[in-house]
Length: 319
Image (cartoon, rainbow, N blue to C red; front, side, top):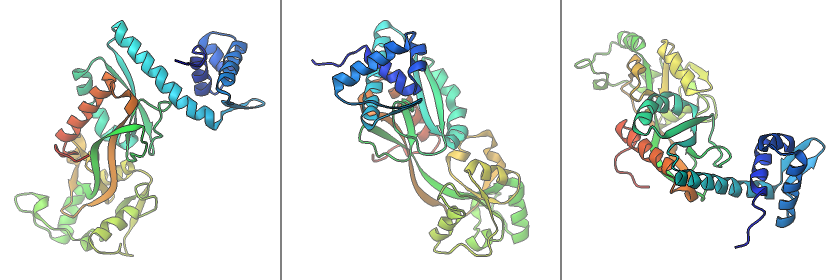
């Protein structure tokens, strides 16, 4: 077995992660010259330059980025395997997750995860967009883009959008449109897209990357164009639109996990209208080479169970 200078690998990982020779030297409690020597030794062995150095600026080369992904993963696996042999039960996992999914669905359930698996220490890495699948970012991910062949994926949720408003706003709509419920159930009624257009529409432009894109898709699902007379109120995030709906400012489009088993979900009424699929499919993702890690598999099974129990995912799905 032909291996590179093994002492140089943790040094390379530290320099790449901290983007600094001096900071890596401080972390590893060695001199900066020792760090430089180890990197030079590794570059000589590989026959490739791993870093670009320009004055005080340091950056990875393309070869360096490629090597870092492999080295980081290998060092993590060595660390996990050593912890198991040493009898260390605690497992620290970094999960990169969309902010809205974390705040509205995941975080309220974490006490149950801790109760069931006290040895699992979960650190959340909040993501405003789709995360880069890399060990440098996190150990596992919730993503809507299962594109990396190095990762395995477990389906959690296929997103759909439906209109909601506050309880008080629903009573206002009922009075103004002279709507009558059967047995107090809003679902027993029918609210047409034309009726919905009479009220301010709270739009989240990040969903379709353009203002009003969510409501355009909702009307298109009904075979209609978005009425030009619509009053659109724009927000950058669904959390903001939902809060605006809570305070009686109009009708918002939201999804299942935003209202899933939350104590405040009773503040909202789901309007008796159609829904629209966004095309986003949420997956739990982990690097296939780390599939045997107990912590990742515990988290995977728990997430799938919670997704099924909360109605996000059917019990039987085709992967």
